[in-house]
Length: 135
Image (cartoon, rainbow, N blue to C red; front, side, top):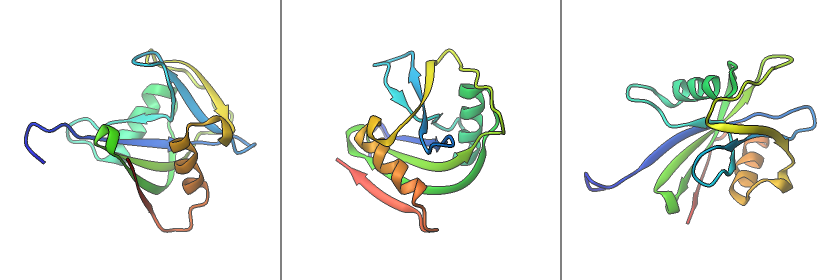
């Protein structure tokens, strides 16, 4: 990689409700897409610290990280995404930041193709971290 190349790194949470639906947030920026809670590390942060901070900012809640389930390379964005299985406190009251306009728990079939793959890998975790590349 050359010094001027752009590369992304982020950490995102798979959080489910009692029906095994996945929590997603609707962005107020770019294309207003639905995505998993999380984001990129700040200078000096590791991925775990970044995920905890991002979830606190985006949801107004502290998450508990259970495990790292997968790391995914997305060629379109020249970016790696780490997916963690997380839990919210009992009876959570989600308070969104200005980065998101709404949240929902969605069934697998209502998620994007990549979110479905990453979500299934996470919820079917067998103790071995999954690595995949998407072109």
